[in-house]
Length: 336
Length: 242
Figure 1 (cartoon, chains in turn orange, purple):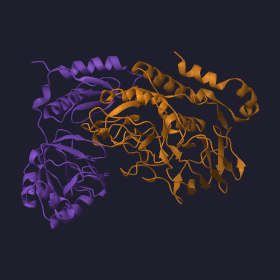
Figure 2 (tube, chains in turn brown, yellow):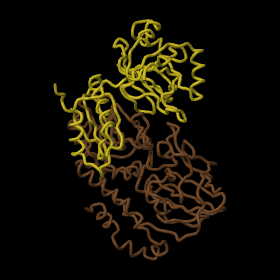
Figure 3 (cartoon, rainbow over the protein chains, first blue to last red):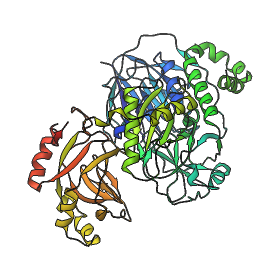
Figure 4 (cartoon, rainbow over the protein chains, first blue to last red):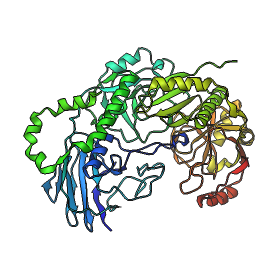
């Protein structure tokens, strides 16, 4: 039996997929990856379906090894130093880990979460159609909690094959787009303060919610509403006046007014925002947000077509950089 | 008589909050649950799941299948059609509760705040005829409507970070059954051995929004026995009518 062994790991590292749906009416949050596009990229690189379960690596480092056989892996998401037996590894490129080798990943530099795609996915029993870890609900596979040193994950042993590389559109450092509501009428002029303000993510953030630091957002009629449903990206404003963006491990209902909702296409980008790095919000219509949603869905579906042979991509690196990949990204997102 | 249309509020690009009112009211909650039932009977293509709450129905949907405008129109129409299933039999549960002592550490203080005795407070709470208005926040957390207004208490100044699984508590004009251990700013009156959420048990979720609930007082010894049975997957709540 081939097993991936977690030799050491920082906090907030867990198995995640697209999350579980259908039980929010019973208070069960969806969970799932914080950055879905990076999850999809990690999976596509190792030949999995886009939303198979992978390891979501938190901001700190980890060391992994293998027991028996060989497994094909790929790292995506937040850039960080990574090495196989001390030899540097490229992101967005598949590689083989064999027994006796050590995979090390360092502290995230360009974001927060990286994804380790595993050919054949993660072994385990799905609950409500998902292996995603939610410690509070006691759900997830193979452990219903974040990973810790000594854990092992059953994997499918991989045969040698050509390694693949994925050229992803460059992430834009643009404002985080929101749709106002559902309770923006609880805030009056403070909606303008919210949209004009410069925000940073507080270090006390986690998979349940990202706390924001910035201008004070005051309520028109106090900070209590009758509890109603929440979604990934709901921005609730508690009595402190400092908003909290609800993330996939959120409570399924809440009693604070929600000034706006981060659009689906930008939630992964917000999840990757490091604490202290300022950003702004930008409001757009539901129709515009849904156009962005469909563009992101098309981009995710197109990932297999973007796969390249790893060696060729390395040779073409200069050409790729001069080819304005960021410009191509804008085209891909604006298509149709 | 025509009912006023609900407010259709976008919750981002993948959900609509169908709002029937802004306050806690049985009338709004009935309309929420009625729309939820109608959607179960006549599903609209593109809806992923629905989340009924006190006064609104949150409808999650896939924008690749249906847009905000088209779905809003259909939901408004459906919300205003008469509810044919109002006569559907309601499930009624009796939930055992051990009040006070180590299982309800706020009972004494709550009785004092309400200017009554612990026994009288327990009697009034246990006599209530409740309905599951919504389930939310954490798995199985059941918010009940029907609390005697005389038992309403503002939430604690400082929420407790750790309250036990099965806690029965009062916060504002609400009472509820908390399934998992966790933080709470409500007043802890007692504990039930019933698990409203339990993995590897059928059903995993015991209660449904709309279910009727009454409480039955048990002592600490009985709590321990039933808690042990519940830990082995037994449903220790009594289903009075289905």
